[in-house]
Image 1 (cartoon, rainbow, N blue to C red):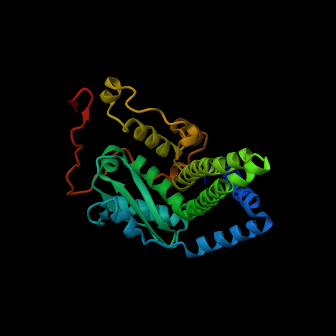
Image 2: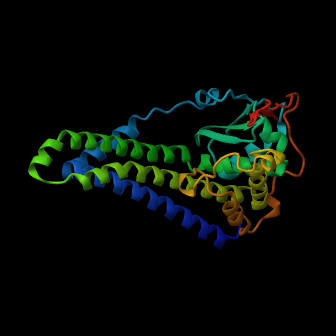
Image 3: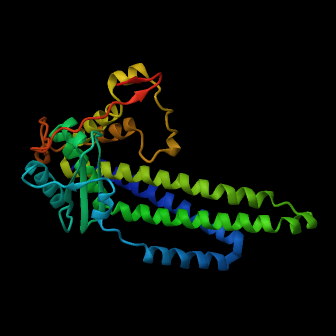
Length: 315
């Protein structure tokens, strides 16, 4: 294990943050229901939320992976990678080892889908050829952390709250528009209800994004605990950020895209994630991976197509 006190402090902070964000979303949704229909509206919203969660379809992981062109990665092609996933799943106490999938993309990326008992991990060609084995283990451990916490289910709850909030806000605005002649004749102003109905969906969306960022911090912490090597993931995060654009591309077009405001990001800033990871104490005997690359045997490298940039130069 990592230093127990540091691990506990980070875990309490992450759990408290997630609870506060969920609480904030619930307050906004409940307040909107109270504004539109009073106490009975709150009861109807609770019932609707329960129905949405209960009837929400469980999409098989292979269906989601097929959208990205992912295909199963055979054991014979990447035995080390399968060994790392099995070891991480065992350390995490997962009921089943996630299946490995390969995505023929030059982008360095990895993602997890499914539930703890039926999950899959997808890795891109770019990830396996760009990162060392130690860094790949850190990334895989991060995704296993998401699976262990069932973050797909957590985010689906947040999505259900967001959809209900948007639906209530649209219904409220429609009712407000239909009642404008009556309110105008009575001399009352619908300004404040309109402001609240307009602002509620935006507030909930911002809370959903903040919840996503909090789950990333928690997955980072789980990855460090599973590997005993917080520096492995920290190094991977730094390298992945550098790989977002080619180095000389950033020099020629340094502002190729507008920076995302923090409130609109699904992931926290890399610098803050790395800082938190490097506060943790490693445990070398649990470390997996080394400085070698582990590309899939027999799979040709996937090249990026030439890109056209203003004023018409390809690189």
